[in-house]
Amino acid sequence: MCGIAGAVNFPDSVIADGRVAAMRGRLRHRGPDGEGLWRNGHAILAHTRLAVIGRESGAQPMCSEDGSVILVCNGEIYNYRELTAELTAKGHRFATDSDSEVIIHLYEDHPDDFPKYLNGMFAFALYDTGRRRLLLGRDRIGQKPLFFRQEGAALYFASELDALRNGAHAALDPEGILAFFALQYIPPPGTIFLGIRQLLPANLLTFDLDGCELRCHRYWKADYARKSDLTADGAAAELREKLTAAVRRRLMAEVPLGGFLSGGLDSAVVAALMLECRPEPLRLLSVRFSDREYDESPGIVDTVNFLSSRHPGRIEHVMLDGDCESFDFLAETAGLFGQPFGDASMLPCRMLSSMTRSAGVTVTLSGDGADELFGGYERYGALALAGRLGRFRRAAGWCAKLLPDGGERSFAGRMRRFAGVVAEPEDRRYFALMSHGFPESVPAVFGSRLRGELRDDPAETLLRWSPLLSSSDPVERMAELDLCTYLPGDVLTKVDIASMHSAQEVRSPFLDRDVVELAARLPWRFKQCGAGRKLILKKAFADIIPPRLLSAGKRGFGVPVARLLRTAWHRRALELTSGGVAVELGYFDRDETLKMWERHDSGRRDESRTLFNLLIFELFLRSLN
Image 1 (cartoon, rainbow, N blue to C red):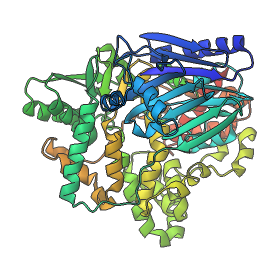
Image 2 (cartoon, rainbow, N blue to C red):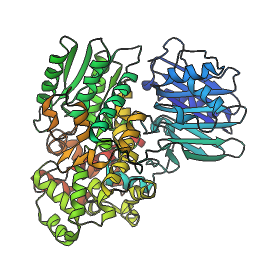
Image 3 (tube, one colour):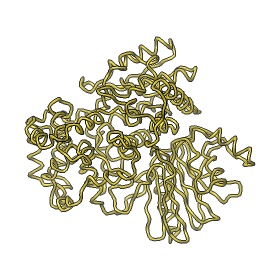
């Protein structure tokens, strides 16, 4: 893992040198093992390195044999050995043992579509001095981030938003603000800043220096339209084969390697396969919480005991305390994202990554992506049921207003939210579910500066994806939409920022190209049916995971935000949201914000989602100054 940054076609080389050097400085946490820089009169490419593969010879920027093609890359190419053998047979000569070098040689043979040959997680910048063009590319699902900004004839890019902005003024984008308050994240390609974009997953951007023209094309997409005729047994066998191969590919490393283990199915499958694919002892790392509603440690212990019985003496398990009551830790973590990010699971995720790195583990495997690919979220079943109850929309709307709001995870709170979803038109139900009823529940606390923006429909950030989806099943379309928006915009963003701040690499076998393509071909009934979820995943691995997981429901990596806003975070959160920069600038209405706090503190209504968003936005505004 690494950090990359650079600029092309800049008007002043001295200023550009300073800007790129500053961007690289802001990315050193991503790559503490080394850094490099290449420049000529038209381009600058910078790199910070976390050395995992080819530690002795893989320094970047990296050049082609004749020096005409220059590369900086963040990530891992898991099929680089096979590609290296094929390219060597064609006459290419490799100068390093690094997986990244294969990108240069692929480009030389396939200059317009080379990313489609890569199986990995990556974001790269490649400059071709002969063609005078810069190419920016990103992996299929969006595991590795890449941001860019065009300023006149110049183009700047960086791995992180904070590095690209680098303290310079940038106007806020109203669409990004509304997306954050609705979804708690900003779906790509948008950001909170006007003029700064995130490269979409599976996209290749080309910038010609002579014409100053940006062109993007999508080099891959999961095809949900063409379904397999495999039986359930055949599908389970193929899934077992492909996921096992994906895990094996991700075990290559020249540094200590381990796995994250929660109490759920996905990480248990990955851990079991890691034990089957390598003979060495395996270090598994978990986090526990004092709040029983959010603590998974009993399930974790059960999984460890089960795996240990199958692999005696080969597991070293480390259980870490993950309580997130420190407000300073919250403020510091929120500041790492460079824009508002409201998924509170960023806190235990960062804590686990930091403690794992401190325990001497540089690379970990995780279960990210299984929920989106194999129907793990409860919301898919909720959307299916909402579709069947659509004729009762008006009655559902009344229920949504009359049911008590007992909290995010309470039965009453979930029923209230579900009734609100049923009340929506079919094409807006996914947005209503993901946004918890925005904008009806939010605008009261918006100040004059935000109220004017409500004429824009925040649902458009998701609805615009509809023509690009390939599934014909209305519920599966929502899972496909998650793969395009929620997974890269929320889950993978959280994992990347939280882990790379501690210079730790997290690999996700479920997001292997072959696994994703197989999952897209499988019919939805293999994934969810009635109350059953991840059916094909359970069928494929029933013999190597604890029996408990075959019937256990999903528990997210949650944080008791509602309680913490009433207790450990209360004083400072109240001060900041009711009398901070956002109130002063007209983003929040102070009186309405205080009323919302009173409702939450008294227990009359759970306002934790909105209050947490207000707090995160306030912390973001303060970071700008």
